[in-house]
Image (cartoon, rainbow, N blue to C red; front, side):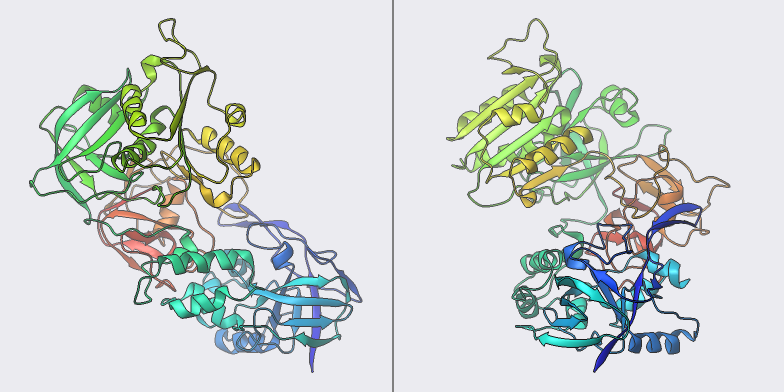
Length: 586
């Protein structure tokens, strides 16, 4: 008979780690006597990071003494105490290799169901004094598991653990964990996992993404279950040379460039919504790298990008003041997963300012196909002088049989004609969206300033649109993900403090920063953090793929090797170092 050896709880607290303040509840201590288990938590317990821990499907975390003994032997340690792994329940049985998702157990007065393996982050490494601990739990198949509470009640150390039901279509905790985190992801096992009704929604979404990404032979390029993105094959590695064949003004502040490959070879098609990284070489100045959405119709002769002149934009000033017809620029292959979904669902394209560029490419694609889908074009500009592509969009909309549009000017000029140049004198905001009879079962594509997208995306979801149908694209670096780290004053990306490195040049394309590598940093993630480039991470040991980022050019080596390799053309920042010069999409 299995027994509950210890009930462990702990509330979030702040600790110092690598010069930062981290909020964590990884420290759990045993409770004496009975403790009430509720649907979302145990009395006296808490979670610092609700995105990764806690909630209905992760109410109670379980770890087992056979894993304690395993780690004591493997790590050569004898200092473990109950709660060492941040678990709520320490048991003397139910190993990960035998317990199945959906198994049910009675402990004391409460009844539980196994919902998913643990998702381990960097804070276990802090607790254990071993940064790679998150990766070790996965690679050694000992993650532990979460329980959802089916019946609330009191439990205490010494209670027997009685199995009251066995899972249907069962897969063990260890097997489910392997299926997500380790290479392979066989299609038949993904389908089997998706039949497990007790599996938590987050893991189901991950397996569904892997299944959709899998190829006919069962292999999957990259790990869509962890990145949440479609993996699209790159047409070429690094950069190709293009010449500027045409330039045109789209508005007072936006100029389009048509770029033809200098080798004369036909260009591969791109997906509407994708972007390229351009490299400009001003005379006597360092290479400038910037990301721009492709703004025109896909064709095999040229690519079009449209660039807004920014007040302090070095690259946009160069394009407007110095770059001429016939000059050569460097361009990456089209990339990005902000792309138009196939199907027959309605399409709503929302943009503000220069954010029109990727959704304009989508409108071109729909017009080429003479799509019969319901299509809405919604755009916000300040006035007619700052409204790019106005005539081009009107022409495309006339081709489409079921298209409607609404243009908002926030500060129209006296010469701007209502009902002709624009439809409403206002910002394109949620109030405007609510006044329209938009198809809530459609796909919504948003691009523009961060505040515009954040406000509209949140508001559209509240109107009843499924989160998976709201697609956003952001110019510049994506928002940081740094779980548990206290907020600090943001700085513009910069050279790391202290002596400059003498290594290869590392260029952060979206941040507009190029810095020489310094080998005092363990990996590219630490280097980016030292530069105050916005970063995204969770495990910091090559497991979770939160830090997976586009690698535009160059090559890296891994120390340690990740559990599952990133997709071709991507890099895991947390465990990689440069082999030479790099251009990274961040």
